[in-house]
Length: 94
Image 1 (cartoon, rainbow, N blue to C red):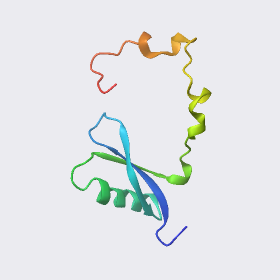
Image 2: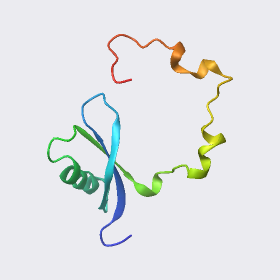
Image 3: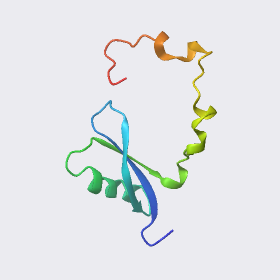
Image 4: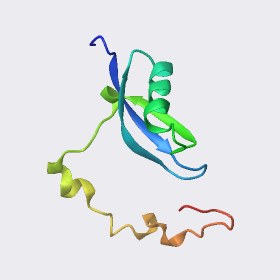
């Protein structure tokens, strides 16, 4: 850990009900300070209504080499596709 704290990834929700979107990162020593830094940096001009901060060390990502079988859709298992699901009335942003 440096003098600036650890790196926290920041996700912003623009409006309630919408998905959170990654917008950048901040440095902080704890979660509360990370939230304050994220608010000051990424939401000070009404860019969002909610924030998530996550220590970057806990984010696990796939690598470019995973593009093949790792992401193959299960085409033989059509019941897994969302086309069989009827979205209830009143649900938006899906």
